[in-house]
Image (cartoon, rainbow, N blue to C red; front, side):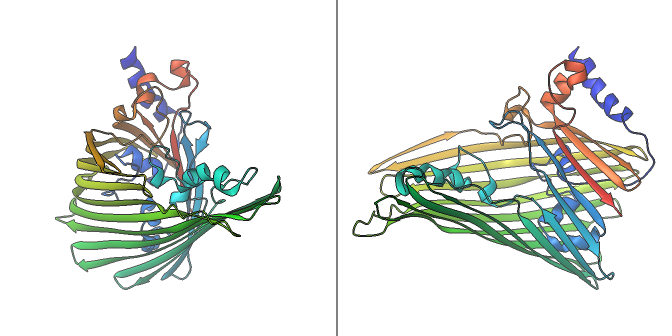
Length: 436
């Protein structure tokens, strides 16, 4: 029965649309279906515009985005991650773009296990004790908007983008309180054919994140709770070295750094000492991969070394350092044309991870080492994150419109609702694009 369900899912995919076009779509669903975690760094895809804005030159006059990730395993349930973006060619050399609700700042992340990755949650644990009873809690910034610009200068393409999101709130309960949260991120990138067979693709990121709150309980001095730091830096480099018209060698390098802290102040005669709580996250990745394309078949994947260091420093109480080392990290995807209107996809993503946790409290230091798996980016559907290594997907196109979907192991083994009787959708990640 399980094998029947496994075979029936792709057959169901292939029967739901009938159209004629040779266009292949792109986006989050395509990347995950092709071994992305959630991005396959060895794949050429329009999703990379959100890393390197200069690639807007290669994808003019389009609308694309994510319908969302099904996530019934998260507390709030439902879908998350929806966004929409568009690009327009102005005069053949200059290009403009706009994205709405693409939530990339760490202020949008929800990761209770790693407080450095979720400043909003961590700050809210302090609101009641610092700002006073009835104070407004911090919320995540409202839908961010990102503006893109790119230009073609001979073989060199340059691009930049700026995004902004903000939230503010007030409350009057036993006094007054006011909070605000904002994020501003800027990216710049270039793509350049530095030799007849070598394409350079590089981008940098700078982000500024802030949170500030005040509360004045009735008859009491004003309290303040502010985020300090909140700065992000990132860099992403890639080469595409062509051996011939079919094979390419693709080395990659990526780095990211983010840190922030909390500051508590009470006005008037009484001053609460600053606890100097500080958090930081740093990542580095080095990898080598390949692209092979021939007769409607594409192979994109590789192996990398990745290390992430998460530090939580709770003033003089304790300091926790988590070091995650992946060797190797594997991104592997295969895409094949089934008909002029449909492509099939298969992916494999895995990390052989070692996790070292060092806790220093006073004069005592303890160190433990375990293994770990990166969480799956959709609905776990009864499987553990470690079991979600294999994906399958499909891309369907008609008259310039493409719809891309992907599912994980829990879905193609259990089957969608018509086959399993379990309340679940056919896809758990869906993206779309339209070329006009």
